[in-house]
Length: 62
Image 1 (cartoon, rainbow, N blue to C red):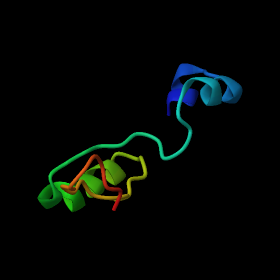
Image 2: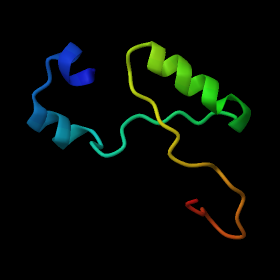
Image 3: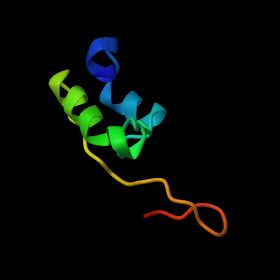
């Protein structure tokens, strides 16, 4: 969307933005499915990619 609407060349997109997963939304787990549904209805593609979990030190990727 940013590339298309902003008329940004693919090379500049890779130089400027993290072209991995894309944009992430952190929402309460109870709202995750509804959030995915709403984003998909808007014409974008949304997926659940993980969760935030308390760990003993730092960050745990789950």
